Amino acid sequence: MFNILLGVISVFFTLYGMYYGITGLFAFFKRKEETISKKKNNKFSIIIAARNEEAVIGNLIDSLKKQNYPKDKFDINVIVNNSTDNTYKVSKKHGANTIKCEVPVKSKGEVLHYIFNKFKDKDNDAYVIFDADNLVHPDFLKYMNESLNKGFKVAQGFRDSKNYQDNWLSGSYALFYYIQNFFFNLSRKKINSSASINGTGFMVEKKFIESLDFSPITLTEDVELTTVCAIHNEKIDFQDKAITYDEHPTNFRVSLKQRLRWSKGNLQCWKYYHRDLVKSFIKNHNLACVDMYLNNLAAFIQVLSFAVIGIGFIEKMIVEEVSFTVFGLFGMLLSYLGTFIVSLFVTIYNKKSVTAMMSSLILFSIFMITWFPINVVSLFKKEIKWEHIGHNRSVNIDDIIKS
Image 1 (spheres, rainbow, N blue to C red):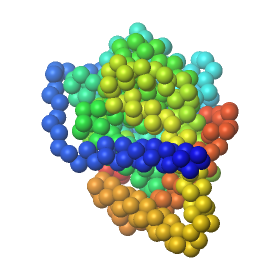
Image 2: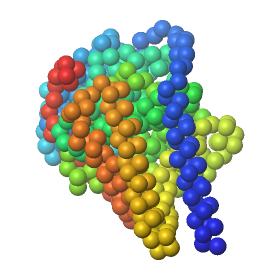
Image 3: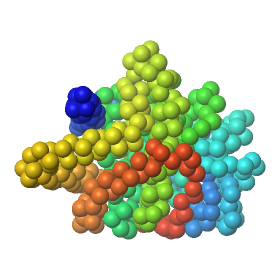
């Protein structure tokens, strides 16, 4: 009976992997671009939630002021919350509309809910969300404007890195997002499905977000908004030319805390929204609902799959001794080589230096394996607090683009 159960679970994992593998391949297909239904310079309100970000917020504001977009069609708003440094003064000095959050907030999601309500009477068409440590390509708003004019109410830009060369860990984060950009967001665009929101560098139409009365209840507001969009059958566009340069952690302990919050947030999204995802899929036959149902279960699926593989490996070692040990090691080697090849491909595809990324390419599999203990903790730890991630990589947008 136990072996039958293991067999059924193994089949599920195989189908799970095949689903993402096959759908990811559509990124290589060509697809006709959507026609732009109207020509309009939409008005954007840029929102930046900032907590103790005095070292980086000025460079972000400066990069936004260099947008190749009419200056009267966007405004920059820094929402300072729970700060104990000079974030407010630096933001004001660099010319942003700086607002002190007037209600207690514990997370970025709560800050967004606060400002969406505060700006209800504001004259704008859409919001664009950035993290305080970001830098933004000068053409970002131009391409987000295209998405709005094509009829999309939500769009995600390309998440790049401003510090992928710092060490193997920051480079691994960059690879993680390059893979997601290509094999998920781009592939979904090619099959006329919905991309996912990646935390920063995304746009949402004002009327749409107000119709949702979006008030995040999980630790991951980006995954939650993606899930809500899937439930409402609202397609998220992917604008790979609208680039945000993000600062990734270089400290492993910080990385563990951050990814633990991500894993727990995904599980929370499944807990609160899995029934609505099923109902929406039945009603709309929407692939995005399948994506988010499986994505929000990722932590549970990885832990269970590792457990099944481990049990099977031990059982075979006892029965077949050395032969399976060699076979198992060969399988792990193939898995490592496959991960390395995929990582190498996205590095070259995104025109990054292979030499500069070599340590990350070699160790990226280790980065992915470390998700296992993170996911185990996320399954059993009930309370996980949203913790601020400090940033201090002060870089100018002109230096990023030149490099």
